[in-house]
Image 1 (cartoon, rainbow, N blue to C red):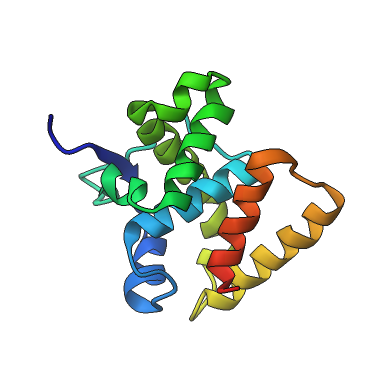
Image 2: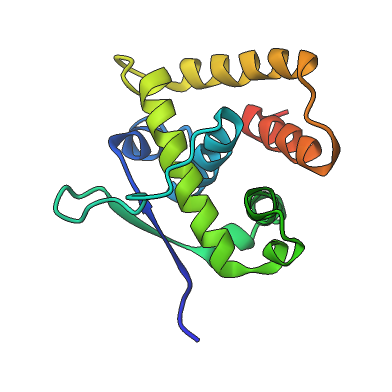
Length: 160
C-alpha cells in the first residue's frame, strides 16, 4: 500500500505561518489548524478543495504525519465522525483525508479574510482569534469529546 496523501489547497497563508513567521513548524500543522477553524466556523468546501496546480495552490501532506500525533489523529477522527455521523468514519483513513482537506479549504478562506491579509506578523491576529473563540465557547459550550479536543488543541496552540 502506498503512502496516503492528503491533497489540499495551500494558500500563501501556509508560507507565512510556517516559513516566514514560524507560528507553526510544519505545513500539516497549519492544515489541521485550518481544518479545526473551518469546522468551528461552519466553513467547509465540498468542491475544489484540493487546490490548483496551475495556480500553484495544490499541496500534499502525508496522513501518517497527522496520525503520528495522538491529538491530531483524534481531531481527524472526530471531524470525520462529525461530518458523516457514522462511527466507522473514526477509523476510515480516506474519510480523514477528505474532511481534513475540505474543512481546511473552508478554514483557509475564513483565515485569509480574518487574519491573513494583515500587514506583517499574523501571530497576534491568530492569538486574538483563539482567545475570542474561547470566550464565546464559555457561552456556547461544545460538550463531550469534541469539546475536550477543541480545548486541548487550543491549549497546545497557545502553549499552555
